[in-house]
Amino acid sequence: MAESNKVEADSFRQYLPDLSIPRFTIMKEQDAHEYATAFKTGAQPPWLHALYVHWMKLFAEPFKGVTTDGKVVPDLFKLQSDEIPIDKIVSTANAVLDLVDDVQRKALLYHIDSPEWRTWSNPEFLLSDKGLRLDEISEEVRAAILAVLQATLSPEGYEKAVAAMRINGFLGDLVESPRVMNEFSYNFVLFGKPSTDRPWGWSFYGHHLCLNVFFYKQQIFISPWFTGAEPNLIDDGKYAGTRILHVEEQLGLDLMQSLPKNLQSKTQIYQKMKDPAMAPGRWNKDDQRHLCGAYRDNRIVPNEGILVSSFDEAQKKLLYGIFEQYLLFLPATARRLRIEQVQAFEAETYFSWIGGYDDKSPFYYRLQSPVILLEFDHHSGVFLTNDEPAKFHIHTLLRTPNAGDYGFAIRPLIPPVEGAEGTHIVW
Image (cartoon, rainbow, N blue to C red):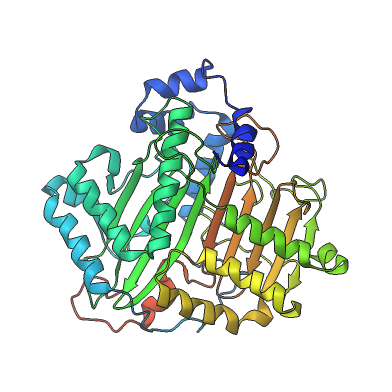
């Protein structure tokens, strides 16, 4: 094991939980559905059940999108070709449909306008059981679903997604609860019929990996997405050495440390990760500091921190290195075009920070513009026992503000086809 990895491993292994406590003994006895039922009925910790109830209230709201002030900025997105291999993506999706039986097909397919797009979530409990769960289907169907991901995502994006799944399996083994958390404890759903010329998409979601993908012809939106890890390093077993989210971590820290003192103080909106100066609700036990996770489709997030237009050339290189990492799931041309769109709004892009910015302190940062919002957050333990945020537990997410999530902003621009599925948007 490399020395840097050994330090990471030692740091999380001192926080391994006591598996004899009821939380884990019960979890070992339940499958994913039993575990979810116990959660929904309030048998799990009250604060978690209260969060679920709040999420359901948020879900009942009509979709608007993330904004800075509650008002959607219009005309930010247009129909375009991202040069994605739509023929290949459609053929792999149809291969899944050819393999499944009638019951599975019914579970798998949702209308393109279905509000179920918005019911993804990143915790380990299966709150919305739609589509097919990969650990409950044949290896042949599972491989076909993974082929859809591989055809859609960039090679490096697919590698990152698979790594997140493997780390989830590693955590499941650490807490001896693989029936709830394993490498394939993820659901896959199709929205609309796979098509080269009509809108459709898919969702893939589970613990610490959620991807929502919308297609229209050769255009693609991968948004919102969530990627996390606890711990973010596998230090033993078949996939030892697997590590994710450390690049985003280092680039963010390098950028913050590169700023002059006066800009650092303006960027650092709170000095402590759970700061007494925070308004009620700015920190919560589940999301901690990040604002735009599951069910937060309509969050109002005012700009904070400093404008990045003041950065020098070296700082902008770090800045766009972060954007590259957060757009990694996109194929190369789509990623380049999205970066160009982000650059066009550089004068309206803000960088904000919470926590320390020495080499050891955990931290949160956000980059926000009219066309992209990304968050990085070090968390305290959920399965591990660290009470304070630690660098081995990371949450990252991306939103496309102003109704860009789920490709919603371009849907009204798509020419209708009379009688075709997806002619009208009904949320």
